[in-house]
Amino acid sequence: MLRSIIFIFIYTVLTFYSTQALKTVSKGSWLNYVFIFIAVVVLGNFIYQFTFGADEGRVLTRPKSYAFSFFLIMLVFNLVTVLFLFSEDIIRLFFGIYQKIFGTTKVFSFPERRRFLSMIGLGIAAIPFGALLYGMYKGKYNFKVLKYTLEFDDLPDAFNGYQITQISDVHSGSFDNRKKIEYAIDLINQQKSDVLLFTGDMVNNKATEMEPWKDLFSKLKAKDGKFSVLGNHDYGDYVDWNSPEEKENNLSDLKRLQKDIGFDLLLNDSRYLFKDGAKIALVGVENWGRGGFKKAGDLTKAVSNIKSDDFKILMSHDPSHWEDKVIHDDYHYHLTLSGHTHGMQFGIEIPGWVKWSPIKWRYKYWAGIYEVLGQYINVNRGFGFLGYPGRVGIWPEITVIKLKKKGLS
Image (cartoon, rainbow, N blue to C red; front, side):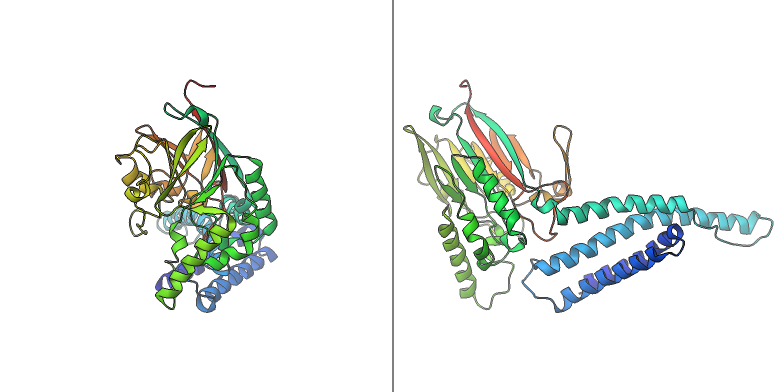
């Protein structure tokens, strides 16, 4: 509650300050009144949603997500604008003091604001403003297929050219456009991969969120099957349930849903994938995350039915598990597939030049392929979205990985 009051106070002050730039640029035209009207509506909706809106636990509901996001967008716009205004006001203050002390009239007065500086401030503020709006309108469904080829010395010859499609972090409770999801499902199937691997977070909170989308995800196809693991959101830990039994039933319902969709859910378990008399091991652990995240993953149990010298692919939702536990495990995990970070749904990526997101300050391995001690991990940027109902620069991802045996074409 206190945090919301602080946000509202800052928002109000910054909005008032920003109107000064608009007044300078628009010369008191209707534009200033439109801005004030929009600012008031955004603030009113924010207060309403977080006072009277539906409470679904620590994860934002769809209306709350939009209310918070519009509030944040206006806040960012105001903040950038105010930085320019404040810089100019410091100069105007010193000029007024100078006039008071050294001027001929000895009168303190502020010079008028310079219109071009206000225009520059508003123009720069419009960049993140427009980007965040675009992220909500288009970016969240701007699906990208990212393809990688990874070579291994000990990959069985029969699996040379074997193709994996990975998706992660569906967060079906956030979806609001069926046609876009239909397009994404078709895009996944177009890859014609040998196996499909889903690395957790099918829902935000509750199994019921997946019900409207079950028929679409049931259309996913892969010759050697579809496999999955659980992510931290799948356990229902972010909801105040009426009873422990209700929470347990929710998880049971989600497991049933995954089975109905056609996923073989690996709960600290393993399977073998066979091809032309050869095999590789597929291992799936429950969620294990650094800090306060659930630590249900059990590698020892998961590999109890496979051999140490098997070629191994591990599915583990949180990449901190790979960093903290997997890399230095007695078993060698050739390839680990994770998700969880979403790439923060915000950043800048220009292939071969720059890859940046604020999430890098939290996770060392946060998006794409990494190699440590001869072991690879792919951190998928996520299929869906959570919290902020959009994506800017870090687009929803469908990963396609081709396995190659070194020395074979």
